[in-house]
Length: 396
Image (cartoon, rainbow, N blue to C red; front, side, top):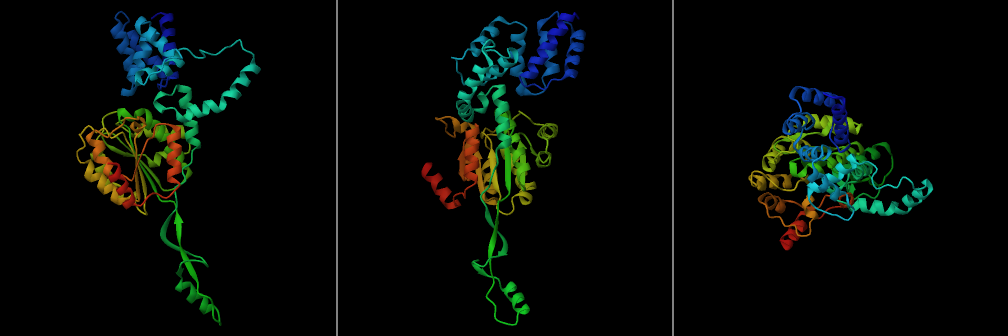
């Protein structure tokens, strides 16, 4: 292989890494060795050789395909790419939004005026700070560029989750408590020779346990990776947090998220989970959770966050009965669905119809603002079950 081709392969790998693919020097060397063995006479062989080395998951295929045809000069896709880079064009298609991060990787620094004085640029940044933050708060995770995703991850790490306190079985002494503490009163009487006032007590309060069930199927992959970072911050901020991922199977990642270093934690999660970006078996995953984990983690009135779009490959089979059991086992069940961001959204799939009657709240979760609204809602006591059921009947 010529030195020029080797150099281009290195630049191509660098662009893929900047766009979000986990590519290191080892993969670059493996790609060069593979091309030396296969040859570069046929473009299809060249494409699939690099694909075999650089692509590990299904959700990386579209990004690699775009990057390959743009970097190795496919005129039609290059023209399409330049169109995506124009600031006047807006699109809701995931493929086009993925190209935005690829544009950053292939053309770093485009759109910046390098000849502008440094002082003037600083003034412009100061003026636009509030606007940029407000835009980032409302922007859909799926439409964010690479830099915006980095800012969103940093914001998620700073986000805290104060759950509303709930009464538990234990009591503590309180002069204004609602109950008489006969045991404490008798002990005080034994220590005293005179008449003493009756001791009183009240119930202790503490935040309930938090259980998160997060869908990691292909339709949820862009959102689930950010939610895992959010749950890492929550797990290290408070106790009694349990996190589970499900696609075609259920995986507990609670112990991995207790690792303080977020990069180490995410690497361990990635190694432990085998069904990233695949199909979804919601009913089967909920059945496994109810059978193996519910008695361990749903005690003391746990709050459950179910994060899924409700799209089930089994056509909703078994979801209704498992959701009913889960709903009866927890204090509060909140369904977070990124599809709720659409104004014309309606729960038409069988999976969605099976889930909806068994939740206390139904919320969108697609942006930083929606997560902040969730945090605000969890910091307040939820509606009682009878009130929530009546509200669903009126809405339905």
